Image 1: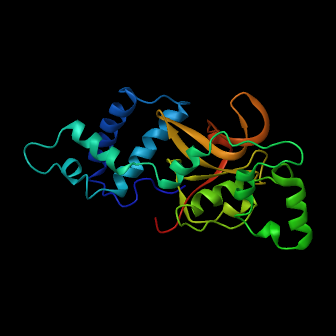
Image 2: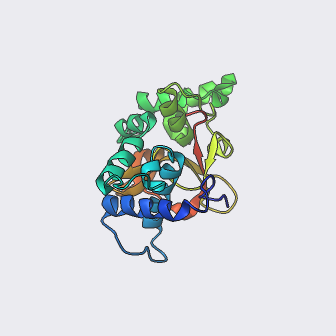
Amino acid sequence: MSNPYAGVSEADKPAVNTLVNTIFAQKTGVTRKIAAGESALAAQWMAILRTVIKNQAKFALWIKQVGSSPPSDKAAFDLYNSLNVAPKWIEIARKELGQKEIPGRTHNPRIMEYIYTTTNILETENQRKYVAREGEEGVEWCSCFVNWCLRQTGILGTNNALASSWANWGTKLSGPQSGAIAVFSWTGAKINHVAFVDEVDGEFKMLGGNQSGLQGGGANQVSSKRLPQGSVRHYRWPPNT
């Protein structure tokens, strides 16, 4: 497991932890120690830690304790919020919530647009005929959706319809953060699904395509559901962003 404090000196670690606790308390209202098993709270704490460490220079007044009157806790929280703006691709993905497969021969043109973003399933004439005939019902389109959302912001994803194509793409993260791409394995080693991590009201959600809705049912729509962190194999981040 990677060191979450990479790049932080031993002398600065206590101040970093104090700052993270301060921001965490303002964000969640939780001031006590996080108990074992509270994975959602722990994930939020770690996400704040990653933001603080990534932006040490901007938080130097708190970490280095420069001056006799350090900035206020509110100022730290405001700075954190300004740095933790949801990436553009998440805003785009949110606007697609509710897009749903149409049973039968009438296809949802928006979902077909996601599918046609990737080229590996359209390489042969037989593949193209199959996709045109079966539409979204015949394709596991979760990876297509992620590729499409990134493409709208000018980021080239894997250009591949397989969820497994994301396993080594981009930069590996040590945990969830809003905008990350979560690669899932429901049963052992095989990668089964890919979706975005979306932070909603302090909780990490799984925002993706080819998922069931909040009321269950088949995997047939763009939805946002609770993130099953135990099934995540990797968290990836677009390169050079």
